[in-house]
Length: 456
Image (cartoon, rainbow, N blue to C red; front, side, top):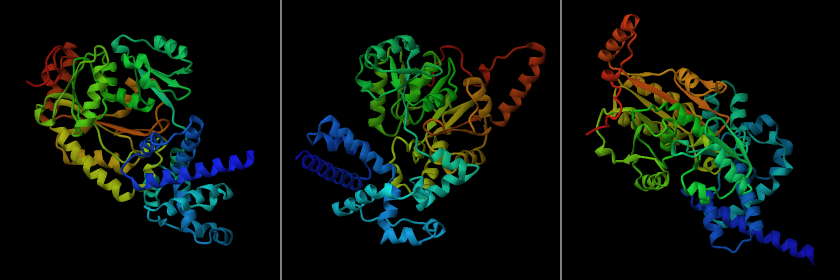
């Protein structure tokens, strides 16, 4: 009787998994985690059922392209037995079934359940890496060797990291004591970062609500430091999104930079406002782009919309719909955004470009095109910025033009300085005069005196 009951429960969970996958495939514009949350809200699932369903659902996305390969290979058992690995690897495209009917989702689930019967080398390398072949081709182009690309693309469980808002008067030790008191085990990371051992509802925590810490991947925290915001500077967060990097830059300047946030997505900017409002001493301004004065900022940060390939360990469903044509569309948009943002950089100021992508087409290719086309902008050596801001081992994938982080969520950052020819000549004269006067006053070259406001 118990065996029968267990079998019925398994069948019920399988039906729910099929239904959930079908819902996610139909609603491809909605992230899978949100589809999962909406699905569970409408059903009376216990915590064990919910966890079991969650584990299977996201494991499915991490193996999606293997499942698709199995579904597409008619008579797969014979195909796998009688076909050489070279012929298997020559399958360049996987024909994905129409994603609107339950029966097709059922086929994908069946393939998912059969996966353990096959060794990995049966599948093309793109399927092993859970990417469309076109995306995998761009991925391998972005790294020195296929072995290097495989190492970066391999899925590792994502960490849960937080950053303490020390500029607002909170300390790491106080946050650690509080979280340990809640039964949450914490590891210390460099700077203001902590790593949580087990997922917990952190945004409902009393200290979070009081503005003591932010939930932010350690890689994103490093990128925020590499923006190199400085005390007294006027800073424009041009694609502010949820405001995470803006808060981190306040932390890096002890709250003494003047930050302006803007974003074309008004609802996201409203969420950033709510997030920042809970933090003591966090003073920023929110403006629409039309209200922002031109050539007024020492630092303009562009966290550009991108493919999100660097966050696949958190969002494995992104690989299902992403194609190489999407990457080139992103690159065009990114270059356009950089050009728009450049007009807000004052002489001597810096323009920072960030993506959460590993791909060269969205990173080095974009900034190189920008510098080639935009008069007066030159690269700041990111290796020097890294040495000055990060007391960590130098990242493997980096150059003077940009740094790619690969041991955390994936990020790219590059900095360009606006130095028109006349300003370069003035800079050279000042450098020469230092030999005699020892002075280093740059305010007349675009730096701002303490307390000066950005714009009118």
